[in-house]
Length: 174
Image (tube, rainbow, N blue to C red):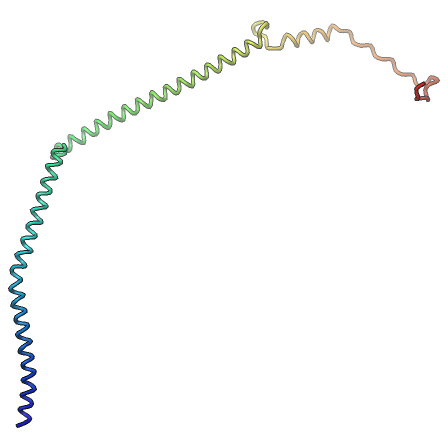
């Protein structure tokens, strides 16, 4: 019998621990279930607040777009058309300005080319002073030199030296 009492005493201790652990887990489950209801209520309330805030923000955004002129789809289509019109007007104006710049640049280059031609003609005229029209510069001088050469008698050939005389071998001077 002594053995039974020690076995019951050992199992009693183990049973007591199991019983305490069961009670502890039961109380924890009870607390969890007690908190689960309010937790779900808090989660639902926070979700509702979030959804309502998002709705209000989207309404405010729509109101801000409407105030800025970006309202409904019809309004957006009108805005796109207006933007295209403004863009095409800007493009046309830019093309016109560019064409004017090109024309002005061309006029400047043409004017510069004409002034260069006028300067060249003036220099050419200065060189040709006294020449007949159509004569090349210097043509008169060349013609005059040619006439002078033709009119001048050709020089007589110099007499050939005579190496057969008495002084033929003597190259020293007297």
